[in-house]
Image 1 (tube, chains in turn orange, cyan):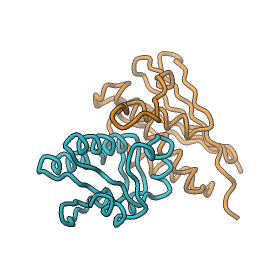
Image 2 (tube, each protein chain N blue to C red):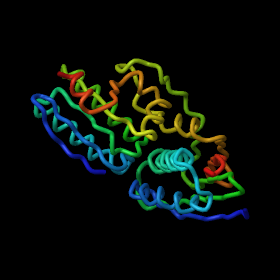
Image 3 (cartoon, one colour):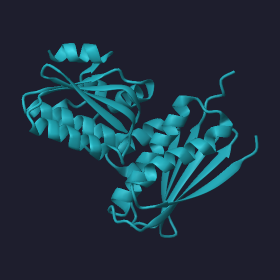
Image 4 (tube, rainbow over the protein chains, first blue to last red):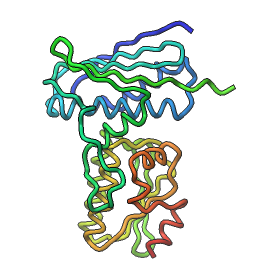
Length: 143
Length: 111
């Protein structure tokens, strides 16, 4: 299967989220993904995009950033690039997922899920931009 | 996301349908806050038709369970779909929230 690339322009609004899920599904459709793979990618990207909007841009509307999706065989790579102040979401302290109800922190779960759902997640500050690269290799299609 | 409410004695059942993402979660948060403010103390969240939850939705679930608990009440979650179950598992929510196989079992646990 040949490689394919798609660039999705995004703005700093949570209104982007439902359309993002649809765009990810459409991009992955040629791979005939199983529900777990598609769900993992959609969820990780909601979390990553939400982080850019809320932490990166402080929930201020009107900022533009991009998501590049790439397919090579069954490996899907998502690269999120924004010009917000330097912020490495992956450097966030791990949440304690075994803490009792009263002590459960309300934040940090999104990044935790990104790390759990992706095969790899990498951050770099490049040319004044935050670049987050997420990779997941999809399971073979059902026979 | 669609939220359908029904009551059985002193138990309110909220049936959630669709996607509980960052855009939809404030809607559920407001609904839960209104229930607690109106005196409801027992809430079943029927997730049998909920096919997606993100950390924003988890925050509302956790916040709702905590608010009910501090008001002397309880929340019970029912019938998680495979996708929602996976997110609960990855987040450790199966350990801190009461999860039941069906809405009937969840309601029985609150009776």
